Length: 270
Ligand code: SF4
Ligand code: SF4
Image (tube, rainbow, N blue to C red; front, top):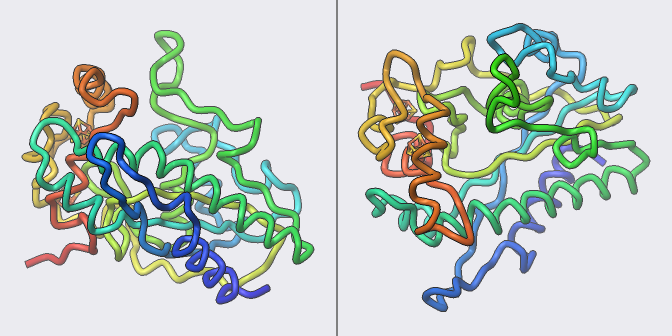
């Protein structure tokens, strides 16, 4: 098992799996959710994973790779870019996300999990123990503070931070991760007792690929993003709660990830 083989498995599964296709009940239209993924790799003992423990980065509740798998060698991160069909429909949205985006958010997450399990099985079949932290019973996430002092909008494993460590890209003002295929998509990851060369990180700081153009600020109907503070998770959640009746049985927004220069590519400074 080498990285090229793993990448082919991931691409083939994305192209062939029926889970990557939906028929939207509102319109009867069939839709492919994702293009084939980008994969990146980091050493499980990369010092960055320890740096994520710092307060203000993720925090001491974060679990580095070897707390998920004691003999972990590699963290594998993947980014599944939303298809042109999903992105273009949300680009046209002004206050409520498109149905295509909502399917991508909810049914898309099921596909992310299916791809994660597919890669996990392939690695295990090849003899390498593998854990998917976000599918582990030990994974937790909080979208609101449990107490006044409790952590908010955090978790003990972060897909975006894993992707950053694995060379896939840097954060944007809207707090998504900008990859060379943009920000509009979903992330997944695995920790494995499998060794492969790390993907070079073509950046030195965590916001390097964001050009601070402010387009995501203008796109956000919840006024949740500012140049000074980035994204305010409380305002974002409040807005998504307001529009929930129009989105049910799904949820989401993602207007800040579409109709912006970082939607489907790494934006360039002019
Ligand atoms: S829209 Fe512009 S400011 Fe916002 S995250 Fe993308 S590149 Fe950064
Ligand atoms: S920050 Fe939240 S409310 Fe604003 S566009 Fe993005 S997802 Fe929507």
